[in-house]
Image 1 (cartoon, rainbow, N blue to C red):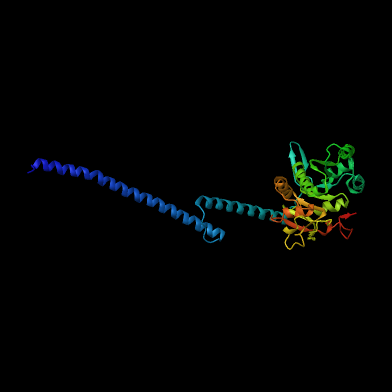
Image 2 (image 1 turned 90 degrees about the vertical axis):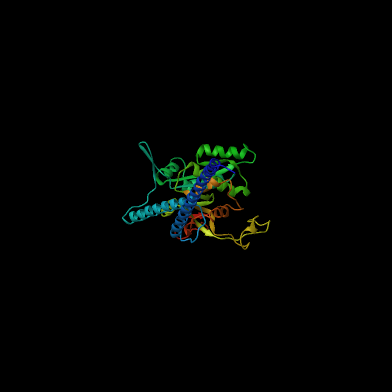
Length: 342
């Protein structure tokens, strides 16, 4: 039979053991409530932000994270600011503000940005063509420098190197260039008919890196240009940041290996009968943004059998303004034409 003292001691021990258990249970309960509350609050925040984004974009339900949502909202704010600036620019134009060629200031000297860099793609043994162009519209010496300084037009013959580096062909070009100083010699390019499209790509990349111009033009060495009309036409497109100007055509795709215009990749072009719209190869122009695009991506830009098709293919997937300019159709002199092919 237990005494009263032993009973009291057992009761006290039982009470003391229940206290920590009770406290632990209370702590666990409060912790669960706190965590659940935080999760609920975070979920509510996500729902709110997604709804707000949906209102802005009009895209309905969106399954993206809160961080991505906030980034998109910040981007939308930047777009709004840009749109406001564009509206201000449009209003300024209506009040008489005209775009002019940009100037670069360096200390006390200012330099006008060139209007256009013209690359006249030429080959070995075509010195007679080059001399005819120099006499017709390009000029040499002081006349060439005047064309650059007064009209903002830089013109250069573009050529690569001989497959037999340093042979008579290379020496002839170097000798001619010492007299005229009007060549761009692409040291990394080997002159060959099948490499002509790559040559055009290398020219645009080189020119965009060397000259900060508004436009860049490719011209064949059998095309004569009315340089004043050419400059005036380009000036009307200064307000287009990404523009591709030329005598636009589609052209037939030739799949016969023996044909002069054979296209090895003929099977890639839709119905296999015609190319996409692109500027004719005698003469075409691209704006600075597109030339910079070629400079940056030149290692991965695909070239086809013809330079005009190759250049046109690079701009299909871009937000580019294609301008079908009849004045750039050089097959014959016509009313208002600025070039003629011979």
